[in-house]
Structures are given as C-alpha cells and as structure tokens.
Amino acid sequence: MANVATYMSQKVIITFGSHKVSGTADGSFVAVEQSGDGVTKTVGAYGDVQRSVSPDTTSSVTLTLLWNSPTNAWLRNKLKQDRANGSGLFPVLITDLVGGTKFTAEEAWVVKEPTLTYDLTAQNVEWTVETGQSEVIN
Image (cartoon, helix red, strand yellow):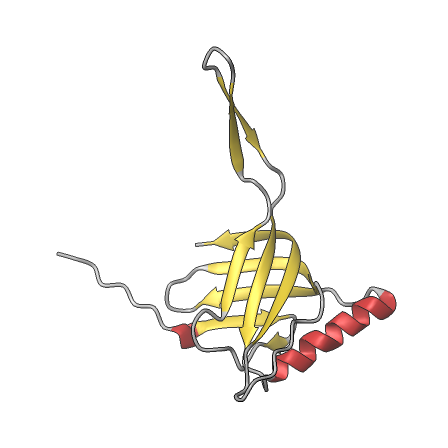
C-alpha cells in the first residue's frame, strides 16, 4: 500500500529570535542553501580516491516577502543595529510542522538591504540572511 505525504505551506513556521515571520510571498518564500562544500573527492593519477569533509556548516537563507510585510521593518532594524554596534545577530528556526523538518542556527545576520523594485503593482522583497553554524534536523 502506498504512503500519502502531505505538505502545507501555512504550516512552515519561520522565526527570527522572538519575531515570527509574516507576510511571506506566494511561490517560493524561503530557501536554505548550505554554504560549505559538504564532502568532496579528489582522484589521483592512478585512480586513488580521497575524501575531504568540510567543517563549514554555515548557510544562506533567502526570504521572499510581500512589499508590506511587517518582517521587512524587523529585518531592516536588525541590519541598522548591526551597522551601528554589531548587535544585529539573531537565532533562526524554520519548522515544517507537518513534515517534521527543522532548520536551526543560533546566530544569523542580515547581509544588506534588499533590492527595491517599483512597478505598477507591489513587488516582492527578497532578503538574504547568513548564518553561523547551522543544522537541518529531520
């Protein structure tokens, strides 16, 4: 008998410190990409293989928000704090309440102001958040 799995975007909860992210865009609203190389291989002249394990478990989180999302102001404030005195760090937790997958990082920061696009209709705003050491838990 086949197993049926369910995914519900509204059950993916994103928190930055005590701030619950809201006003996410339609479509891909959050993406997490590992920064390090993971496990790489090198093959020698005679076919010998060696593996190298990267200690880099940092990640890059791309968050796509609606133009009027309150999270835009929260992220902008964190960036201002960081530029003023280095106090813009915050933890990240992304939890899929249905599927059970979690992404966590104890320290993260906003990279820079997002590109602002003005058009006839409100456009999405894309933020990049970098993390210290991070982990995906299944």
